[in-house]
Image 1 (cartoon, helix red, strand yellow):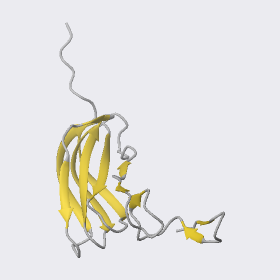
Image 2 (cartoon, one colour):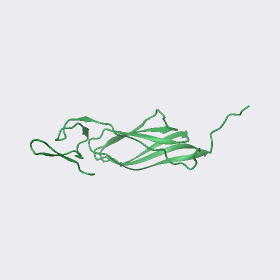
Image 3 (cartoon, one colour):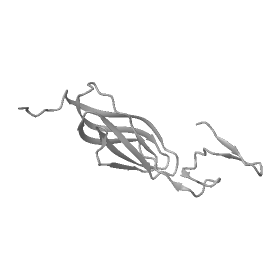
Image 4 (cartoon, helix red, strand yellow):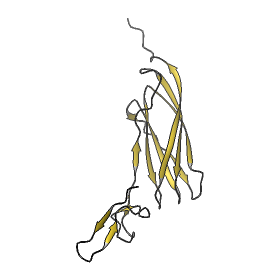
Length: 145
């Protein structure tokens, strides 16, 4: 983390703008008040063996560090569109820092949309991976004629 400070024009006070104990937007200088925010992440498309292949997305794993617990919501995207189904996992203080989310979606391209809520201290996301099963090289075409 790169520390960021500001100096008050009157009173000669120095304030830290990136206090790791403050997790609310518009909090007071002492860290009180403010409003909770919902950070989110939309992954890039996951690499596949075949550019136009057809796959099944089976599982998503994400490591995290949440000193006071967190709720992680995972929304799969397939072929550039949200699936409309969100899978939510809530982790208490001291829980193992990894979520393993079972999935079953078929498509040519996959992404994941994550949201974090219910945290009272900073949450750090670590490495993640997905399990995909290759189905075939092309989607079935109806008979022409």
